[in-house]
Length: 260
Image (cartoon, rainbow, N blue to C red; front, side):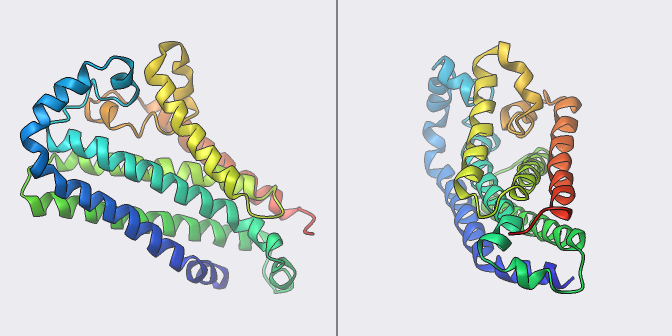
């Protein structure tokens, strides 16, 4: 577990910064709800009637005037994007960072196999993404309790579970891509996460692009669909499979890779 501990220590500062920023923004958003509650009904009706803009972000389905609708729209977007970017950037640097930082020569001289190295790095990614999501859940749920609102805790937990699964899927894909690179791919990681996000928006805009639900995790991590009970098992299973294939490819490729 030496590599696992090393990765957790190396990523501690990044983990704390991302968790504090994303969790803090979520808490602030929830804290703003009471001051905005009086005008929420008018805003909800306004958003619902904005045509394709409303459909793109699920505002035609969510009750923006309720705490759950507000949480799914505001806090969900913060964690959905922030968490995905964190998972993507962290995963993309796990394997490529060893060559880019010229530490692979030192690491591979130790009596540990490449598979063990990659597995422990993958485990570090899982623990860091899980830890960030637990902190953000605590910030969001704590904020709701602090302002004294009644929430559907079952839907809230399912929503956070979907967001966690989405981030792990993106992390698995980026981990696989990381094995192909010889230096960190920050731009590639951010671009992939953004591309999947916009693919989720396109599904809402054009029913002919419904097949994208099997490619983007933003489909099953969408608050409007989840709260309405419209999420099907097939896209979730497809997402889990893609994430697992990405991680598995990374393990397989790194095992026989010619390290520069």
